[in-house]
Amino acid sequence: NDEGEVALENAYYNAKGERDSGEIDEARETFESVVRMEVEQNKKEAGVATDDDDDDDAMDVEATTSKLLAPLKFHGPWSYKAVKQLVKLHLRSLNCDSAVKDYERLLRIASSPDAKISPNAVEKGVNNMLDRVASLINNSSGSSNSDASSQQEALAQSIYDLTLKAFHPTTGIAPNERLWFKTNLKYGQLLYEMNETAKLQLVIRDLLLSSGQPTDILEGTPTSSSSAMVTDSTSTGGTHVMEIAALQIQLYSRLKDTKKLRAAYHRAMSVRGGIPHPRTLALIQELGGKMHMSQRNFDEASQAFFQAFKSYDEAGDRSRLRCLKYLVMASMLHASSINPFDSHEARAHRDDPEIVAMTNLVQAFHNDDIKSFEKILNKNEGRIMDDEFVREHVADLLRTIRTQVIMRTIGPYTKIRLVKISKSLNGIPVEDVESLLVSLILDGKLNGRIDQVGGVLVKQAQGAADTGPASSDKNAGKQVDVGSVESRNTASIQRLVRALEHLTDAVA
Image (cartoon, rainbow, N blue to C red; front, side, top):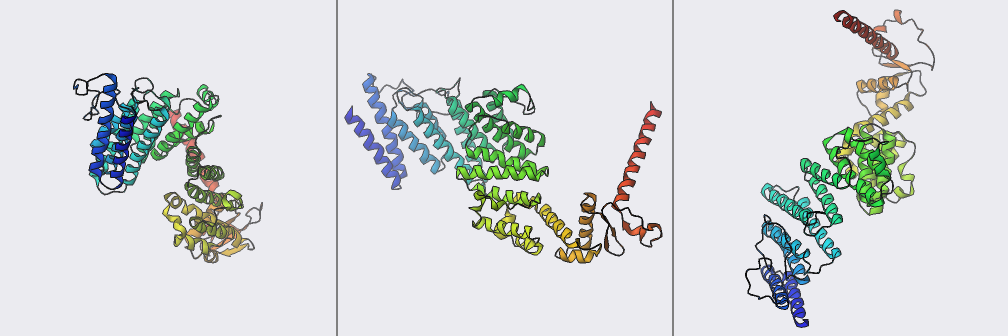
């Protein structure tokens, strides 16, 4: 009746007022009173005695997770709201056992026809709780209190297990395939952040089975029937494929399983018709860019990072700045003459405090200003070196700009001392200069040889043979003629192969 509804509403908002005033214990008791009041009202309307203790489904406040989930009778929308607030209070005070107990009660109320909770309200409430639990785990990741962290991880696992059990498409008390799938994705992401790779693989397996995909990522090729299924699927199916692939790509990247990482990335990129969240797409593209970087495919890495940057930008995620740094780094390693900040999407961020240092780094790179380039890195301007992925490629960045400076320095000369090249490279050791020159000669970018005794690089005209009297040169034994070294190495390998073939024949 109307009086009962008004009483429930007043009690509920009184409890919220007590909570906001810091009277937590009083708020808990008042929220519990809301549940009791509604149960009594609904029992009276149903003609059930309010003192009937035989009906275990009426309150069941002491329910444990070991009990099979079942809908709770006589609970209505105010009970749902009150128990939801109780769970929040338990999470705030890190009362893990009570949080799990009341969260189970919340799910049992939500699944009851008596409660009349709309599916949208249930999904919103559940997602809110899952986000709160994930936030607890993320905030405790750097904590030195291992016991508290373990309790929170156990809490998270219990909350997710209950949710998956309640909304399982075939066995749940409130079957909801969409919510079950989304919960599994959230759980998988949380397990990734907790570095629980074994449990993450089980979650991915469940997701793959539910969407009809092979559980082994290496099953099927881009031309196989499984791939055709992916590319021809509905938008929902294609979206699911990409969301699962995002988890797989993170997992295989952490496990450093390059073969499966590549397969998962190409499967995600072959999807047609999927409409994933921009953040999901950005994650796939970012990790794909890192994969290309590890394979030294810097051009493809640049393209992947640029797409990831745009997707993060569309999602309003500040991770776009991280990807912009990676894009700049990949462009420099590719030795591209195109400045990444020339695009209008990137130009809007060039004055961001996190990006200014990268802007200066690019400018120094294109100007072959190695002193400014190394100064920015050494001073860690803009905290460039705080990023582990950037640190992994600093040696490659330095090698690239040093190579550019070498080619510019030796351009006008046919002979040049290695010491002079060293000075142009900000005084690096002559041995490092020799290493760079040998690489250039082997790569076919420089035609010349190194006189190690004289400390001189001798350039040769393109196409000219070395017809000088090398045998009579007093320094002949100290020259590094890379072409002749390669020839001798090839001949040695051929002789070794022939000897092995002969030995094989003899044994046979």
